[in-house]
Length: 92
Image (cartoon, rainbow, N blue to C red; front, side):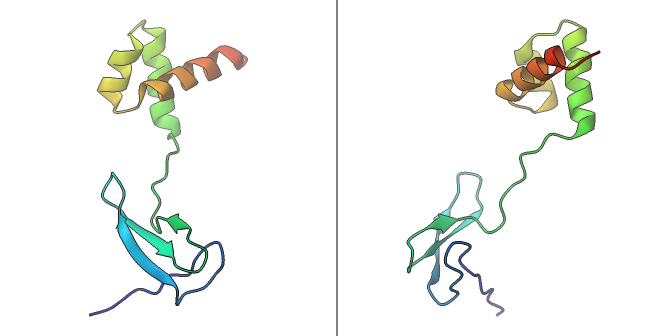
């Protein structure tokens, strides 16, 4: 069995790091016993790809509702609103 050794990103100690449950998405959480900070070593990226952003802008141009766009593209409604605000402020 291979065990991974993690360093605390806050105090950089390895001997005090223990597993501390899972996130809502099912990823492992870790906790440092020394500084009592928790984190997820394999954090999920929340960036939006340029292709998906272009699809959102195109769907907004076709007058689809924000809920429909979010549902069909698998993005959050807040993300759709953010892209809408970004496209309104950017020069055409």
